[in-house]
Amino acid sequence: MRNAKPVLAFLKVEGGSLHPLAPEVIAAGRRTARESGGALFLAVIGSSIAAAAEEARSYGAERVFTVDDPRLDMYRGEYFSAALKQVCALTGPVIVVMANTVDGVDLAPRLACLLEAGLVTDCVDVASENGVLSFIKPIYSGNVMAVYTAATDYFIISIRRRSFEALPKGSPAGEIMPVAVDLDAVACVVNHVGQRIEEEAGIKIDAADRIVAGGRGIGKAEGFEQVRSLAETLGAAVGASRPPCDLGWASPKSQVGQTGQIVAPSLYIAIGISGSTQHLAGMLGSKTIVAINKDPQASIFKVANYGIVGNYEEIVPGLTETLQGMMK
Ligand SMILES: Cc1cc2nc3c(=O)[nH]c(=O)nc-3n(C[C@H](O)[C@H](O)[C@H](O)COP(=O)(O)OP(=O)(O)OC[C@H]3O[C@@H](n4cnc5c(N)ncnc54)[C@H](O)[C@@H]3O)c2cc1C
Image (tube, rainbow, N blue to C red; front, side, top):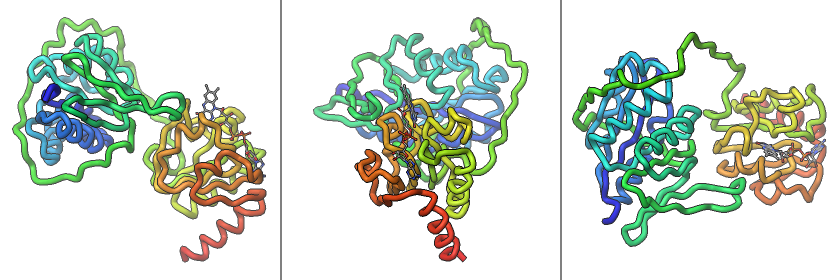
């Protein structure tokens, strides 16, 4: 096969454990390796990573390369790209797979520059035809699926969360191969002075299996209490379209869409949301979509599996109460 090169899945270590998206990154790596006919290698990079490397072995990769250096304790693009470049030099040319996280969108282009590699960010699928490997990503707010082929020696993809089903753990396999990287010559302009993590109330939408989202149709900040109450009843996270976030009715972290979070829960309830392309870009991957909207012509109904036409203020309290009764 033209693309039978190994695939290297980059796994970040956070607080001594693998990043929560690691099983999805490994799944994307395994899938790419299967399509390309190459082996799957893992690159576990961070500081004090012994336990994470051992955990990585349980995903059945052929080899686990590790880089352990105190300068990699938190994400700094210069150090991580230099470390990963040196692992690539040892294992490559390779296709590098990483998560399309905040760190990933910084690291992927840095590494692409260092390796003169092709790059597809926000990739949702991998395919091959006649031995040519291709990578698929949604563009124009998800209205078009673009297909890219890997024409460079090295090639990098960052994957959208929930696009590849996380691999389950198995028996430990694959040799751990520590890599001694040289970071002394790396000019890192970022100095880490501290970290403040803002605690969020409730379930985070990026990890939620159910989301109840409100839009401008909620009408006022107090209206979101009904959204929250339904979400709580369902054990769901609270999401929102952009206007409620801009208006301060909902946390900016709850924004779903092109400039918000991309989610793919098993249940997405959209209340008072019209269904703009920018909003759909963030939630079309949901398994079941329920829309509540007073306008029967609203675009959201075109993508909804179930629709309720009417004023949410007359629908949501009764729905919440009924569900509460059913869950007793
Ligand atoms: C570059 C760019 C990026 C953007 N990124 C995002 C993004 O990430 N996420 C996002 O969501 N938007 C984004 N937007 C904004 C987007 O274009 C839309 O303006 C926005 O999604 C509309 O939000 P909405 O559906 O809540 O509001 P509207 O479009 O105003 O829809 C409100 C809906 O509520 C219904 N309604 C009103 N009252 C009730 C009621 N009492 N009961 C039931 N239904 C009712 C109405 O019928 C209507 O359908 C972006 C725009 C741009 C230009």
